[in-house]
Length: 93
Image (cartoon, rainbow, N blue to C red; front, side, top):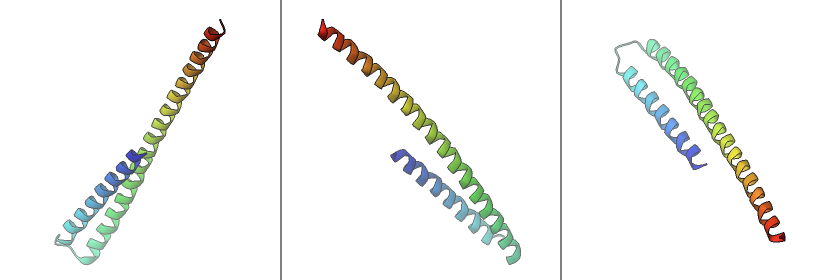
């Protein structure tokens, strides 16, 4: 569960850093205010879209890991039940 928080922090930091870098670059570009605002809006939309994509990707990976863990727990439970049955059977003899 801690990995989920680490990934979220990583992606958030990356997204924020990229957005700030893009804004600073645009502010120092020789363009009119109207053009810069338009570009900033566009970059913000792109960043939002990328954040959603990364969130979906992280969710998909997390679900896969969750399902894999669930399957492994089920397998271990089944093995433990078989071992317990064998132990009971041996104890009865």
